[in-house]
Length: 515
Image (cartoon, rainbow, N blue to C red):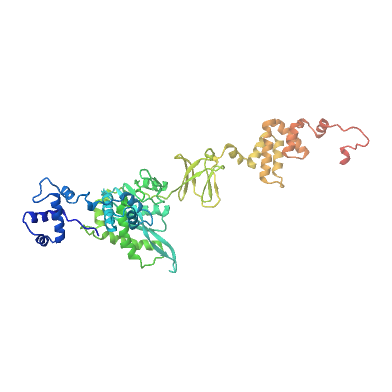
């Protein structure tokens, strides 16, 4: 082990006894309780430095220490390691201080032995490992974290563990008032639910929530501007709070909750270690009983408990809770597909077709689906729980898609009647055809009626009359009559004469032959 130096007060006492009272070294050793060899060594150092008693008034302890133990003395000429590099190397897995000393010794055979090497490193680390004392204002901060220990939840027959319940812990900064609750997981819904129960337990909300960089709460850790989960931010806004995550890998930023987690593990989790719970609510009932005992226990260094300190100091400083509890809303970021729909849990919901192929934010609650583009609400739907269901607002469709579904049989018949009786009769006959599907008949009828746009209603009415004479109601037949202008003939004979005249010949029997 390294040889420890005497305190400056003891060194001065040795010099006073020697030079003022002229005592022997043995007498000085007996008087001070210091070994005679040590007394001799310090007297030699004082003589070498040129000091006797009394010491000069202007001489301070640091200067005297430097004179008695000169750095450049042959005894102290040993190379110092690079302590900064040593400190960084110790952060590597598997690297120990002894390994670093061996490397140092190979490079400097005349260097420090291990005990002195370790002592010098600890002195250096203590000087560089400093922290700032935190001050806590009443009602300002709530520190939250999950405990590393879990409590098993057993099956009803107590034969197997269903899951291990996580323990959520929070503490108020000024009063050290602790809250804890068991959750099934650390996922976002459980994380938000634990916060809601926490606010209700405290009966108010703080100005700031200080969490760790848990994935459910913080999506992108950053020292200056971390990005929090949208649901977490929305919950904080609902309760009038702000979120200020700690720096990554800096547990001292939330030392208050770190200590509270340790207390919860020792006072609550450990006390329930021999009990078996089959439901989460049973576990939380037991936790609440232990939590009340913990908060009622008096501090070791104060004459009050956490409960008393909370009631007198911090309860009135908290913000009042809103009238309604926060409703869990999860956020998704999706690209609108080509059919102007987004998918949420195997269901599809429409947005205006202008946002096709654009990325939008979707807020999902237990009852409502809301869609936002650049923070502007563009769609809102009632949530549907049927799998594979399409929920479509007609106003979200393009004009052509809206018109596609607006032509039922009643509207087609009404349009046909407005053109004429022949057109109406033809459309009725078409829609009564049992050999074709309804959608096929409606599409054919729509095509026929739209011929009035190109050829006019009068010609379409005449063409329908000719088609009824010929016994046809197909779109192609009526189009052919209009293109060949056969709709102007008054009979089939005239129509036949316009197209082709049969020559007079004894072998030509004529159409009357077949009747």
